[in-house]
View 1 (cartoon, one colour):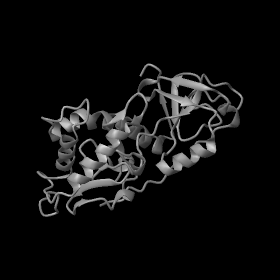
View 2 (view 1 turned 135 degrees about the vertical axis):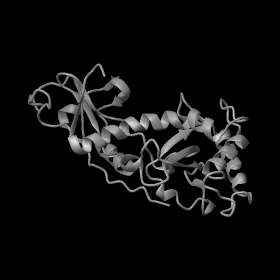
View 3 (view 1 turned 120 degrees about the horizontal axis):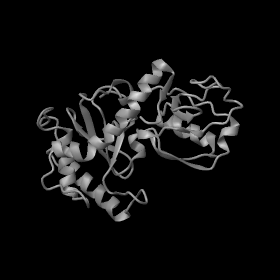
Amino acid sequence: MSSDNVEGRGDPVISERLVTWGLVEVDWGHFGIILETGVNWRSERDRVKMNLDPGIICYQHCEGRLFGFSLPSTCYVCDADLTTEPLNTPPFRVPYPFVRASQAPCTLVIKPSRGDFLHDYRSSSDLHIGVTDSEGCVLEYDSEGLHSDYTSAWTQTLSVPIITDATTNTVDPVWQEYWDFTLHTLARESTWSMERYSASSFNCYSFVLEFLQALGPPGLNVKNLTKTSLCAQLLVPHTSAAARYISLYRRLLTEKVVAVNKSS
C-alpha cells in the first residue's frame, strides 16, 4: 500500500491590502467558488498545510484570468505594477478538491491504487475505494483482506458523500449511527478474507457495493447497483472535477503562470 505523500508548494503571497474585501462570488468557468475573504490567514495556512493544498491562486487584472502559486508584483499580461494597480477581481484560492480521509467521516473515499492524484493520476489509472466510519477511520478491502490500519496513508483522497445533507453539509445523527452499525457489522463477516480477494472480480468495489446495498441510503437506488453504475453515478462527477484541478496544477509546475481567456 503506497503512502500518498505530497509536498505542498507553500502559501500564496497575498499583500495585506488584499484581505480587506468581504464575501466575493466568482464564477470563472470551472473554477467558480464563493470565497470568504478577510479570513484569519494563520488558520488558513494551518488548514492548507494539513490538507497538502498547493495553494493555487486565481486573480484578474486586465484581460482574462491568471492562475499561479502566488500573487506576483507585476501583471503577467501587461506588466502593470500590482502593488499599486487595482485588480478587476480580488484574488482567491482555487478550491482544493482533495482531503485526508480522516477529515471525511461517513463517506466513500477514493485514491489512485498507485501514487497520488496530483502527480500520478491519469484517466486510465485504477482507483482504490474505501469507506470511512464516523471517526474518519478507513475500512478498505485489498489483497491483505479487510482492514482499517492504513488510514494515515489516505492523505490525498476524493470524498464522496452519501448521507450528507447537501443543504447543511451535515449528517443526521440517526443515519450516522446506522452507517457505523452497517459498516462494522459487514466488516465482521468472514467474506472479506485475503484468500477470497481477486483484483478483477472480488475487490474493494465489491466491499463498497455490499455496504451500500446493506445501508440503503436515501436517494440512491442500490438494488441494481454495479461497479459500472457506481462509478458513473458517484465517482465520475468527483474525478472529472478533480481532473481540471490536476491539469492546472501540472501546468503551473512548469509554466508558473497560466493565463485563461474569460470566454473559455
